Length: 486
Ligand code: ADP
Image 1 (cartoon, protein in one colour):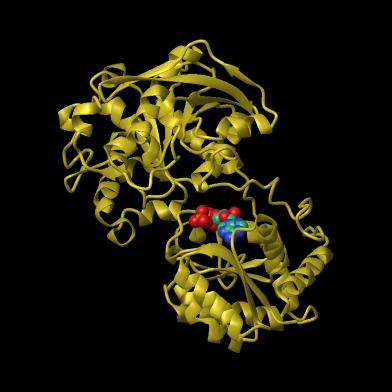
Image 2 (spheres, rainbow, N blue to C red):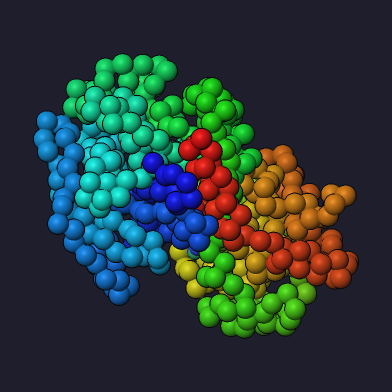
């Protein structure tokens, strides 16, 4: 345990790590928060599975690796599972990649059952064994989502690890995925005590729910924005799990995600045709022109350009966007969307483009460079999410002087503030989850854009001056770690 002034020791236990094995937001956080925490004086290290292709990516980044002499072991399913530990220094963060047969399949299984869930339980137990191999004992384990939720469960209920003891933090990046599967033969094969399967622990309507177990067993729970921390305690947000989150609320904190502000930087971005800053916005006009040209629109138009970069799923509110197309056109705006996802949204946007070729453009697919052009060249960024644990796109758009129009939900509510509040703000927001609400906020934004160029510039500058670095949030995590040491 940490004594006196020595640094707190925290092991990040994560099944995703950008840029090696990112699937979603968890990968981004695991790839950037540890670095910020080390700068804040916390001795953070990371352990992650070496999924197929991961070690090749580590090599292609030019990182030096060392294979440790001691392996890590986990007893599971009446077998000993061993893994080789490969250490690399990733941007100053000691990182341990576990290489084993268990991690040779798909990173995340399409179907969850005892067998497909096994690598995640094995990984958590090997993470608990790592301290011997690296001769470094963490003060606490920081786990993420259902895929490492077995670790707090093991510390509380495993017949061996509960004797060893230890503290754990569970961060919820996406409560929609919980790691639910049939209890047999998990209960016999996992080493957990039989009493770990009750309605107040891991049992969930007759099934195992690893995330629920992790939430109950962890010493503390965090999620990725303060507003989402409140929302997930309601039935509307998390259905049957809301009762447990409400019951555990005294140990739940919402800490906003940060952004990689070195990467998303309008002054240095090489993926946009011209760079700009809050002091000199000329480059943004060039980006706007380049975007209009790419969309096949009149490049001299003074119409407001609404952009969106998104996964095309229900969560992002595209039913409102599709139903609002006529309203957007009536306001004389252009709409440019980049995204991929569900067929009904892709088809709806393609049809809207076909019917309004001079005003609506849909770029189908995932295109990182093009996303930069949309963020930089747009006037308004549209993000009418139904729910949003944190959201990065609204922060990116503000960094590029593109004013967000967003629904007041989750992390959007913690980052986008309506300019018509008495204290002013950095965007336009609406509450009701419907097309009228979205058009109302868009109408106010477009009115301001057309009628008061000076006010509009001030809104852009307000967004560009926001601090979306990890610095503040890293200190909040450090406070949490310190509180847990009391
Ligand atoms: P979520 O994690 O729910 O998808 P976020 O707003 O937190 O939403 O993060 C989305 C990230 O993915 C942003 O960096 C956004 O620019 C990027 N993104 C989403 N769709 C695309 C796309 N089609 N092409 C390029 N980047 C995309």
